[in-house]
Length: 250
Image (cartoon, rainbow, N blue to C red; front, side, top):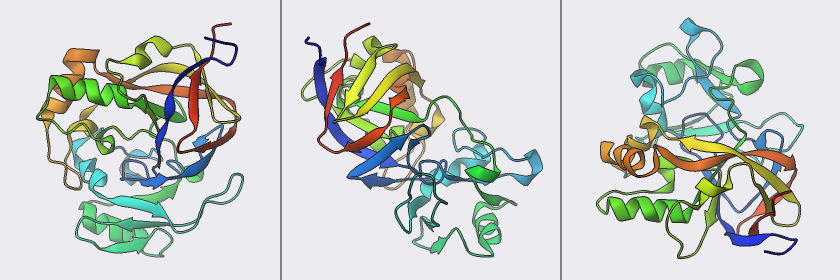
């Protein structure tokens, strides 16, 4: 491994999730700053009965339908600028934008309980572990090897950055904790921790069925871990196909 580090793969996919717990949108490129990919988890659904905290489909059962909704921005978000509205698509194909005057009533009707649609600027984040979640194709392939009947697809795991590790197997992220990654020309990250998986990995969404054995497989073969959290060291652009390098210690 040289001074520029060890090549461990390329950026195979990029994902942004404009609304917490809803399905997201695939990207070709993105800007990454202190809060992660610009626009990621910029909005969320709040339960007025419990304050300003944004709800999560991985929490109480009553919020699990959120993962069947899809959200995308109506215009590209920009750093240090107000977030544009999002378009929300329900499982039946119904669409509406998040800036409608009756957005709270619409979502409350479909979710079957009073809710408030909020931006992160006026609410509390559901999670504050890390601004960026990475996952390798090796991990998905390894999990699939242990449970071939299961569909270990990206939608179940909701990564921001998928690192294509070629034909590698196993769980390479396990050895990266505390290490630094260089992606593309300028982006630099420090791997902070493992990503512990929850019930969201088993929930039905799109054409994916409910499958409790997905989480059971992750638990049995990798201590409930799949993917890693990263902290920003140096902001920059990230694009599909960018080289990903593991930098030397020290």
